[in-house]
Every structure is written in structure tokens, then in C-alpha cells.
Length: 331
Image (cartoon, rainbow, N blue to C red; front, side, top):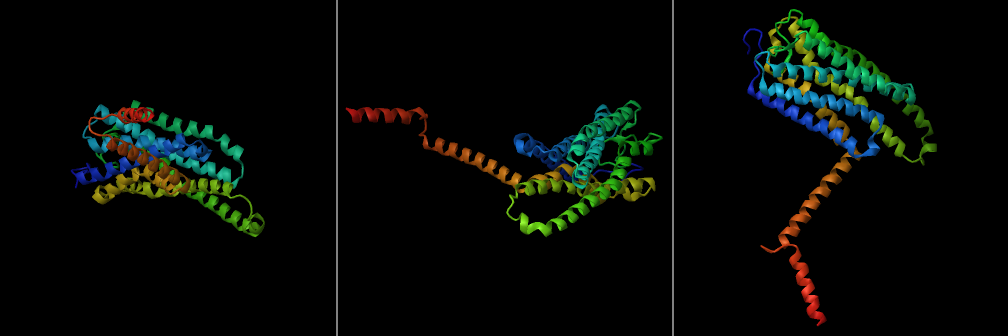
């Protein structure tokens, strides 16, 4: 399965992970495009999801290049790919926690102004800290070929770096572990608050039955963002397992099934977010279906119009014939 410390990445694993990267690329792009196209969707939680999608988009592109190349040396493109994926992956951790913090302040603390004021802090931390870590790692020659020890073909921390475990922690794993601890706590507090609020509201449902449901529908759509931490944990756990197996020097980290799950998990968050917050969100799904139907109808109409024209006859000929027939009738 592997020669020495090198983990062999099989062709089947490459294909599967590349498909996962493609789906994540498309999913992240769709989240960003729907936010740009429809102005009424530009709520703060949806905007935070877009920033997370930008990180996932960069991760999908950089990971796809690494999986396609399957680096063997510390080449220049290996270092560049490792730097981009390190920055994007770490930024994704921070944005995932930032969304949970925003929802906690907004929902549990019932303080929208305080939640909105945190957005600038989220930008500074979620972009600034990963950028500083990545620049330091590149300048100190820590990014490079890692023999797929805790990756799937792409480059990360150099395998020959004497302090590589420390840099693996700094460039991703320590933030991943903190996210595992922080996200469940915030998620449980949010769900507990929602449950209590719904129980209290049920006493007044006969009074509120005639109120318009539009506000409740929009708030319920934003509530679905609480599922991001669950998606994050389920997808990222395989990378953590391989890292722990590396620490105990277990050859199980090179098992093809575990390597494949690691590759899928690290590259699928954009696709998972798209499924949950676009395809499974009724207002967005309805708009997308309407847009696709409109495009297909326009194409069908243009094809029908082209088929009605005789060979060698342009669109102006029927109008000329109609004009001459009207002249003949007037005479």
C-alpha cells in the first residue's frame, strides 16, 4: 500500500476525490451566484455563508489540482498549491465557527446589533489569521511535499520538517480540534433556545394564527444555517482520524478506504452546503427551477422558429411575402 512513509494514492481514489472537488466547486459557485442574483437573499447569515463558500471554492480548486498532480517533490507548484489549500482550509474552519457565534448572539442573546457588529471581527480573524499562518509557513519553508501522510495527493507540511507535527497543528489541526469543541456547544445552546421559544410560543398560537407567516418563513430559512457545524464535523472527522493514526505511527492511516473518505470529506463541504441551503431550500429551489425552465423554453422557441424557416430563407422573407400579398389585395 505504501513504500516507507509514502501513502500511495490510487487512480480510483483520484477519480472519486476529483468528482468531489468538482461538486464542491459547483456547489460553492451556486451559493455565491444566488446571493449575487437575488437581492432579497442578502441577509447577514446568508452573507456569512457566502464567505464560507469562497473558502470552500478555493479549497476545492487547490485540492483538485493537488489530487490531479499527485506531487512527488517540493516543486514550485506544490508549494503554491499547499499554501492556497492551507489558507482556504484554515479560513473555512474560522468561518464555520464565526457563523455559529453569529447565530448564538443573534438567536440566543436576541441581539441583532451586537451580532452584526461582529462581522468585521469575523473578517479580520477568518482571513487575517489563516493568511498570517500561511505566510509564516511558506517563509520558513514548512509547506511542501508530505508524501500524502495526512493528505490525498496534495501538498501540505513538508515530510522532512523536524517540527512538522507542530506545523500541522498550526496550519489546520489545532483549529479543527477547537472547532470540534466549540461548535457542538454553540449548536446545542441554539437548539435548546429554539425549543424553549417554540414551547412558549405554542401557548399563544390561537392568538397568532392570523398573523402573516412571511417573517417566520424567512427566520426558519436562516435557522438552517445551524446545520453547518454538523456538516463540518461529519466531513472533517476522517482527516482527524488519519492525523491521530500518524501520531501513534499506525499504518492504518494508509488504508485506501480511509484515504478516500479523507479526500471526500475535505473537499465536500461546498457541495454539502449547496444541497442543504440551496437545493433543499424551497424558495431558492423554486427560483432555480423557474430560471432553468425559462432558459429551456427560450431555447425551444428559438429552435422552433429556426425550423419554420425554409432552407436558404432568412427571417425577412416571410415579412416581404406578407407585404406583397397585402399590396396585391389592395389592388
